Length: 285
Image (cartoon, rainbow, N blue to C red; front, side, top):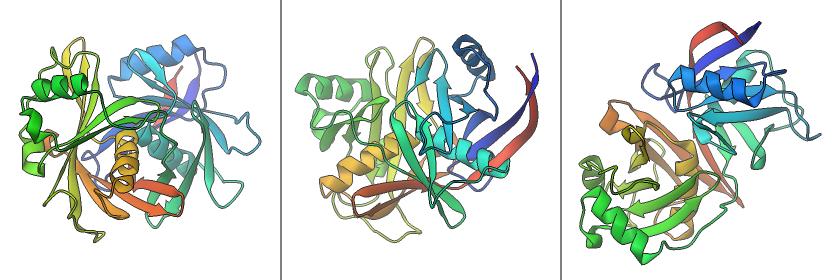
């Protein structure tokens, strides 16, 4: 074991402890996959990441992303939190954007004022969900089938199924049943207003979002989820259910205050938020 630089970063918030934390090991060289997974499980966080030298010539660094029990090809808040930690530790990008190499390929990250934003990776699967899935999700969420006003695959690495409810209040009132939703990662979004008629001012939250991942110990809710918000944005903007620029709130039901900033520019949809380092030092690995 040896000391390695480490940061624990709270993402999608400028106020410590109101976002979603990620553990970032800034030098993962020489660590086996099993060691990375073991450390991730020990942190008891939703994700831990390990920064490595890039293999692709266009990348600034390579990132391996783990959640309890498995490695992920991509995840949003670990991407932003790790980039924040890399820059804080003295990282310097080669070009205009920071370029992260990970399981889904190369992901562009840019500075957006006091925030960082990543370009949403392409969806691996899109289009409406199967009727049987929608019926099951409605039952698992405890809502009527007619309360789901729109739905789509939102698979961009994590295999999200996205559903839109009538309004944000209905989203916040959900008490999902993990036994019904077993095996399904479900993202739920509700507008703060009529469906398809949402504000686009940058300081207003247009949507409330919740992310449910049923696990062995029951229902797991992620506080603020970059990958889900990226996929939701691609779906909602593409279907004219959201404007080209909006802010989504997530984590409200858990006592957090996550804010995810979404903006379409040309072919890219950028997903951004503030990050703040809460713990900094060394970890023995």
